[in-house]
Image 1: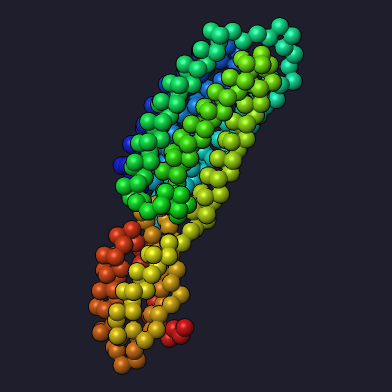
Image 2: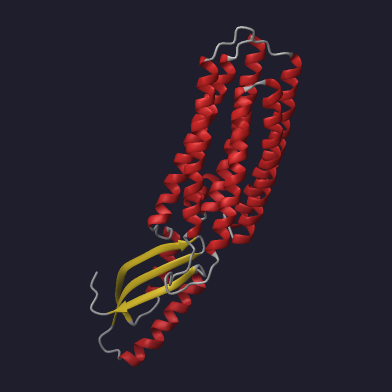
Length: 307
């Protein structure tokens, strides 16, 4: 997903979460629902996370300098990792704590009225509408650059921002459904235990989301290679040159979602001179970039490489 598309998805997510968080907190205040309070915290954290992702997008576009000669593309991965930590600590942790506290508290005179139920249903319905629209926008933008199977594309994508937005919004929709189930059971049985249990389940969901995002972002932070298709195209370019006797040790690393560094060893035929090799190397670099414009840094070492 290009930076512009990612930004659109993030803005849509921020707008949806900010409005929904306000509604959820109002409903939690009037109904005393623990699940609704957890959902409000969830949406508020998602709003903050969206702002952090925007910060990462802005910083990642900074020009390369002496201290960062390959640019600042990995700023996206760093801030996405921070978002994962926030989801775990402030989202999952607080939701689980609130749920357990609600389950252990005494509710001698508990009674959920039909009015309270309708309050919760109204906010949850509004939340599902806004979160659904936000998820649809993020999914639509993601599919523009990843037309293949959605799950595989999500796993293979190097765009941590698009992963964060889609996974967060999907979790938000699922969390709203859990909250709706908790509120319904609480009203039907007039037992607040179900409300607290829903809060705990929302917390566990957020914990899993944080784990998934941290795992995916970790690989990108420490240096993840390009996909097999990209490497296959590089090898195809090199095999097309009869002047090349052998090549190998192809190494790639994502410096950002659309910024790949490539290194390779090439052994040219012995009868070629340096003056003959230099234009061939420049031609090879250009063809590799033509095959994948995301390859921004190419380092080719010529010598006595043997496979």
